[in-house]
Image 1 (cartoon, rainbow, N blue to C red):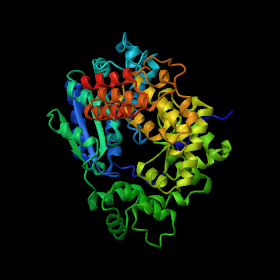
Image 2 (image 1 turned 60 degrees about the vertical axis):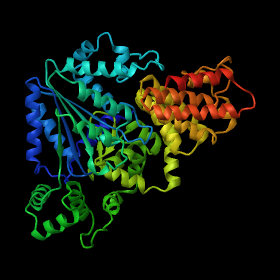
Image 3 (image 1 turned 180 degrees about the horizontal axis):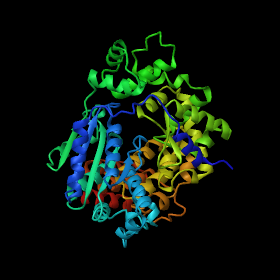
Image 4 (image 1 turned 180 degrees about the vertical axis):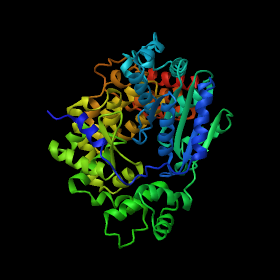
Amino acid sequence: MSDPLGACAMLGAVETRSVSPVFVGRAGELTALTEALSRATAGEPQALLVAGEAGVGKTRLVEEFRDAACDAGAVVALGGCVELGADGLPFAPFSTALRSLRRRLPEELSAAADGHEGELARLLPELGDPGGSDAGDEDATARLFELTVRLLERLAADRTLVLVLEDLHWADTSTRHLLTYLLRTLRRGRIVVVATYRADDIHRRHPLRPLLAELDRMRTIRRIELSRFTRTEVHRQLTGILAAEPAPGLVDDIFDRSDGNAFFVEELVASRSCGDGTGPLSDSLRDLLLVRVETLPEDAQRVARIIAEGGSSVEHGLLAAVSRLAEDDLIGALRAAVGANILLAAPDDDGYRFRHSLVREAVSDDLLPGERSRLNRRYAEALEADPGLVRPDERATRLATYWYHAHDPAKALPAVLDASVATRKRHAYAEQLRLLERAMELWDEAPAEVRAGLRPIDYAESYPACGCDPDTTPLRHLDLLAEAAVAARLCGERERALKIGRMALRVLDGEDEHDPLRAAWFWAEQARL
């Protein structure tokens, strides 16, 4: 049998030459982080936000700080937000970080979670069965947040703990709420919380913007803004990449084209080495990001396109099933992409990711519409054939995402509803609401026989069928409205909940056969709001 884990480890060791081995600039920013680490070690919790445009060097700064923290004896847990669109994985960075802590400190984490494993399993399923969903308990989310903070404080009582949450610009609503609660209530423990986000992605209506405004008012949180490199710093970066003194003309050319963006400097240098070096690169950023991908062998390009559409990272087994390449051919393609420094073997997982999300976005955007839907269908079919290809806590949401982008309403509607149930069980009501809204979007597009096979008992816990047999009564659009109204109330979107309730009452008024029990339920919910 093949050994995917061994393949990942082998590929992860492939040496690349487009990244400078020298850490350039950022001395003040790194000092701020290490000083925060010292204060945390003395017993004063610290929180820092690291902001900067895409490619400016946030990840490299965090990596240097991580190494310094490990050298100082701290335990570092890294979690990243996952880009899956509106139906993103709830609590993804916290789940990943807690999973890392469980690997590093299994006995300590078990002791810290003792007696609350069922509730904390909503964030870390490995702790056990989360039990019932408590869909109507408005205090359930607050209790989950309280237990999470208490768990981290207990782990940080006897050791310095560094919690890194990357890519907040992709954070789901539940993650943003939990982070806000953590930063507001963390009062003891030797802990440093570092969160990163793309400043250039935060437009006026971006959901992270209100959170940033709120955190700016908290004196206990420090924000670090990363600027672009100066010409001197680009010169040092090029010297590190080339392992030689660059020509002044090359420095001027790369600095002008990259405008001091560290990642673009790397891409421009690598693009020159891939081509004949005689012609100018396109001024288009997309062309710049794609130029090295297009120099890969065909199989490697194909694998890169598949991974780009699979999410932030893709497991080896899932990739093998979707690519349908022979194992040796797949490893050869991956080796070429990793050797070109386009893909990386995920450090804490059996999978692969793009070294920089900008390249993944460019590759994904370059897909033809039919190609994108076909890839998503193959992902969904592979996951349905073998659910064990991904973690259990990710399975429902990823399957829903794949079927939705495959443009197959018959498959997408049940998958989206299954994902809404999974998010409800984790008290991720904001994500449940988004999924239910997507289900309502799909409702009329799905075939009647598919809708007839759906049951309220499976998908509408907050609104049992009034006076009907839930095992035989089909799920109705009204049931989705009722479930969405409760989800909106529980996640704090009360105006949205009121609007959904009014919509449902108008539907009831327009029905030929009056349903007083359903109408009474919606009127009671409106009054409660």
